[in-house]
Amino acid sequence: MDKKLMKNALEYHSEGKAGKIEVQPSKQVTTPEELSLAYSPGVAAPAIEIDKERWKAYRYTNKGNLVAVISNGSSVLGLGDIGALASKPVMEGKAMLFKLYADIDAFDIEVSDEEPERFIATVQALSPTFGGINLEDIKAPECFYIEERLRSLLDIPVLHDDQHGTAVTVSAALINACLITGKNIGDMSCVICGAGSAGISTAKMLLTLGIDKNKLTMVDSKGVITQNRTDLDKYKKPFATERDIATLDDAIKGADIFIGLSKGGILSDSNIMSMAKRPIIFALANPTPEIDYHHAKEIRPDAIIATGRSDLPNQINNVLSFPYLFRGALDTLSTTINEDMKLAAAYAIAAIAREKAPSDIEERYNCKLSFGNDYLLPKPGDIRLVTEVSTAVAKAAMDSGVARRNIVSFKEYAATLLGRIEHENFFTKEFLRHKKMRRKDNHPRERKL
Image 1 (cartoon, rainbow, N blue to C red):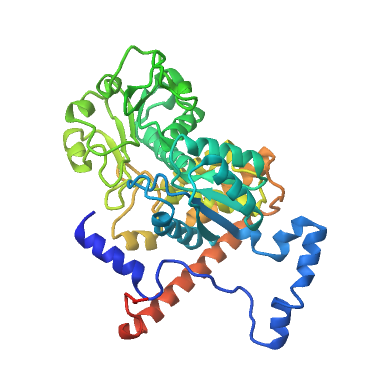
Image 2 (tube, helix red, strand yellow):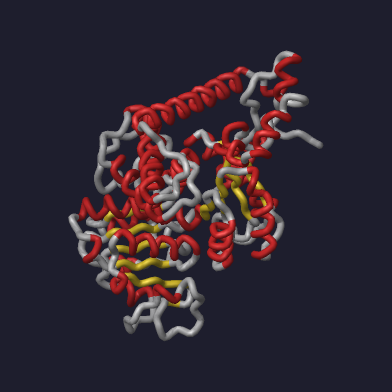
């Protein structure tokens, strides 16, 4: 990591209150009467009601707006298996984004156990507290099994964001890239480099979008995933190709789409020069993409290129999807987040980028945003994401039969969502304003314990 960025990030995390999130009360407790309602003896009333009917927990507690961000730290960002405690800054960050972008309260929970069955049992035991479970930074292939088991055991949404948040956002970008190039997704050949959690889930979703399975090739660290390989687990086997090829060099020749979810610098000049006309290149390894963005644009000016970096055009960022998948699911009391809901989110995200960008977003990012090669996706913080994507997810939940609460008026629902975020933005601005007014010597950046 860049030394200046490292220094600034450490100062950011240690300034004032350590970390990035805190708990705030949602009810006033300023009088003895209010205290008696909030706690003993009044708190017994909702406890009695919930004991009679468990669904009343959604009425009398924060369960319906509370998500657990849970990790064992076995596959954190580009850092690998750094353990539960070291993963805490990342999980806190995820919890913060839930609140800022969708007004969802979230607790980060770091579980110091990588054995799948014990991890599953821990999450299951904690689940009554929450309205949804966001699994995070768990290594493959264990992450697939853990998510599958928890989805079967629990009646609340369980989502491994590394899998599905990536798949939804990549799909949204690909929908728009196809529109720009004028190519039919069913006619395009696609190479996915990286067969971990994000790669396999993205491949599954692209098939749902309409990619021809015979034109989809996956590559892992040992080469092309082919049917003659004997080292494939049950998650990779469905994507084994019959093509007589072995390497990325072989696979990418003539390909229309490259999606990199692997490691930096693995794409050569000759690789992208061998691709089809108007290629779509999503080089998503972080912090170093599979090929340098500017270099790729120079040698393939006809390409549409996206990365995972915020300092480059077309950032493919999970924050465009996961807050709104959970917002729509929580508001309909959905039992799960299914394929219909994910697909609805992808199309809704894509549609937003095709509309005129709000002026405040252009001001925040200091650029004009116009749908095209360099603007495939809306920017994080675009207020339309919470209204349009959450609404699309909620509708899909109701239509697919997993919703336990129906939304009667989607117009009123969107207005409610807008109010949530405007309130949250106001709180954030006020917090920052008061923070600037504080004397730094009263709030040292580092405190000795």
